[in-house]
Image (cartoon, rainbow, N blue to C red):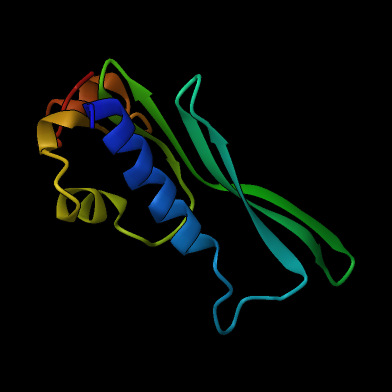
Length: 112
């Protein structure tokens, strides 16, 4: 399996696991995994109504750019990079895209 397909599968497995119903989460808020293998973009959305408020937000967004996983957004408390490394993704293949470029050099992960 080539690297991009391996990384796609790791991301998709993570998002599908995060999309499963969990105790304490409002059941009227559904979780949708968006998979675009062609452009290498992957998201987990939360969509629904909580009382009189419509909820729509991106919980996670990943991209694969130049054979590296870019964490573009994480609106949770989950340490996603720990999961990626547990799955065999080396630090030099993880970019914290949600951090400004001038900060990335100090994160211990790839800068781009």
